Amino acid sequence: MAQVRIAVLGAGNIGGTLGRKWIDAGHQVVFGVSDPNGAKAQALKADLGEKADIRDAATAIQGAEVVVFAIPGTAIEATVSANAAALDGKLVIDAANKMGSGGPADSYAVFQQHTPNARYVRAFNALGWENFADPQFGDIQADLFYAGPEADRATTDELIANIGLRPVWLGGSDQVGLVDSLLSLWFALAVGQHKGRHLAFKMLTR
Ligand SMILES: NC(=O)c1ccc[n+]([C@@H]2O[C@H](COP(=O)([O-])OP(=O)(O)OC[C@H]3O[C@@H](n4cnc5c(N)ncnc54)[C@H](OP(=O)(O)O)[C@@H]3O)[C@@H](O)[C@H]2O)c1
Image (tube, rainbow, N blue to C red; front, side):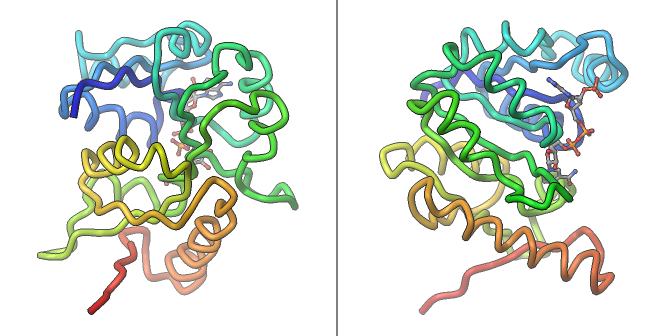
């Protein structure tokens, strides 16, 4: 696939892990953070050197074709509303979870409200980051279940495959709740049953 210009908002566990692998896959990655001099941004810079292009979030979004949200769920609404015009029409991947909010973990409604033409994908939110860093379980490759526009499946599949997981499409953006049911399952097993964070899912068919 051609090189994709990706803005990864967040330079922490999720943003750093995904961004690194997309750089290695040959994409043009810009990290967008609230403070480019902050500890996580600087740790990434120390690790990646010249390959780490770290800007403020608005600048990162500006030139991107795909914008990945890997920031705290509590920061999503302010970030989306402040950058609504720049996000218009772009492919947005929501990896953020609003944990303990009492409402949904996803921000689909926030994107629909502020930037209704953004093409919303729900992905990379339902497994611990360790499984994106290493998605192989012996001979078995972890699956990544996601929802998003059918027209964007080729791009989304490729970006998931770049991380090393097998993409499994669950339907359009309105299937966000189905993806998030796997987030509940992951927490129930990894945390609730103490099976540990190196835990992922596989679809079997015949
Ligand atoms: N950790 C996981 O295993 C996991 C798995 C799936 C999904 N998620 C979700 O992914 C998101 C990120 O999690 P994480 O574990 O990667 O968090 P993290 O390690 O704490 O990193 C968060 C990053 O977002 C930056 N940030 C905070 N507020 C921002 C803002 N307003 N604009 C731009 N950047 C901002 C932080 O910068 P500073 O540190 O400088 O503030 C940091 O670089 C969360 O929504 C989480 O629920 C996490």
